[in-house]
Length: 525
Image (cartoon, rainbow, N blue to C red; front, top):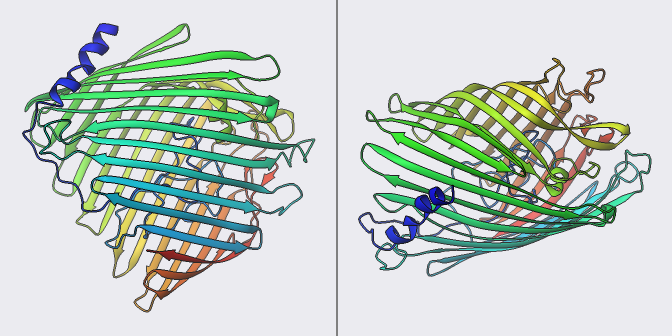
């Protein structure tokens, strides 16, 4: 194994300084940053309970509030990546006050220093007690940078170097537990660096090293994580050879006597063939070693361009995930203590079609089936409001539909719908896995400077227990926001969240914010 990894990754250093047959063109100005409403504190692949959080806040098209009215690690926030509008800015400052939001604010700044793009973000939010002890507050500071080496350089030509560092803290209470005033807080430092290059005709590579130090007052728990990722692809006109490696280690200890280290090493080797124009088929293997166990499965994918507008995608992707204590709390902050757990996805077979109509709209739809060993889920089966992380074998049938209508004369529209059934081997539904999960956004920017946007978040069909005796009420969050541009870069905002006053829950007993109205101002430069 060591020889295989050395063979796959060492040539990146050699070829990276000799190959210069393809130029690399970079945009004149690049906006980077972090969405202002989601704490990007745990940027990693989460358990299948939730999608990964977005990193694209600094985009004038969709404001930071689009899929999260406050900075909460809600279990079902969506990743949204749309084309950036023509107008970009170096900085942004925004503040808002509301019935329960006192206050929320963000400051972001991006600057290009002759190839070195630096970004700084400061975010914060304080949610008041809409029910006793339900308040939540957090804040984030982050600094990052990207440096692009010119393609004409004789050393690391076309390479992108990146670094980042952040500090995140939060505080909340277990308000649906037997001790509702029990307060939890955490402090998390994260740092990372990476280098990547896709400019060479015969090779591309991507390497990253990330670390995170977390401290929780809950059992005085302290965790240190390290994550190393590397990939390299050798290219030819007929086939490519791909190698990937992902190492994750987590050391955890607390005042109850727990002190242990868990690690996972995943490697993938693929052969990509291009039998005809517009078709790429990949075949290979995935191998994972974790603690004293190992996992081996084939992997495959197919990409087929049917015509100028229509594409077909299919893949079979096994994976093992290490979910540390901080990972678990990022999914459900009301969870009880749990050392790292391994979730094994024995296979995930999905097929999808994508239709693109120029720069106007894009439609993607598909279906899939996944089989899991040790699927991670939560249940408050010991104390109400204190959720025990649990695992079981599970199967997931799902279909999805995404529609993106890019900004135009009729406004913009985005929808993301997922239908799923996640069941254990006994045929019961896994708790807190909604059968329908949907987000819809429509907006229109008038020439007069008036901005209008309406959003709907919907979840239904989630059970609260393994026996399937109780269901969560349907989650419905209808929001409307208005903005008015006093100047081209100064906007007044008014937003109403949960207009229908629905009693919404992600986890049993922990009610989300009721109707809230916020007023604020946003300035860009």
